[in-house]
Image (cartoon, rainbow, N blue to C red; front, side):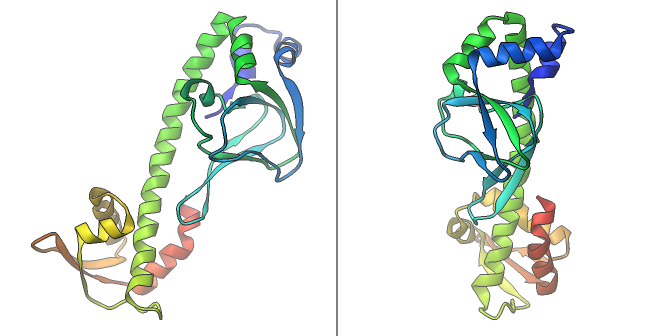
Length: 232
């Protein structure tokens, strides 16, 4: 998600600091942020691009269970918000300041104008965007897998007994189970395989008509759900 403008421009020129800042500020305005200030909100319009001049920020998302998932950290020279130029979409994540932060804020149009002045920089920046997008997709796929596992675990805890004592043996229809959770069948099945690997689920059997039977180690399941944020 982040591309470092200073590293890219330093490949083109040895005069990184003064020339780069002068170039940046011709097309942008300076914005300062306090600790914990949210710079962009997930789902908001994507009409500005930012370059971090100083400070540290965190990129995060809120999953469908309401938990915050950390995606990335941004530091001096990193760019964020640039995908809105090409995709005309809403913000895919939120960004907040972890320290006092100074940003260069561009309108989408001004950021493109800035890039057009140095075609070689534009090429390098776009190449960097593509590489970072691949990394981000890998990260989001991992987050998605963990979310499915967490959803399955919470369902098992809450569905079968209000006292959080899961029956030793249970039988489910995988199709109905997937529909109730709103998760694709293959993702749900993979989550069961992962829980089986951790010995959270035991005696796992696939029966006829998409039925499965299994037993649950409730203590291991509870520990996994409590420790889940440490795995994100």
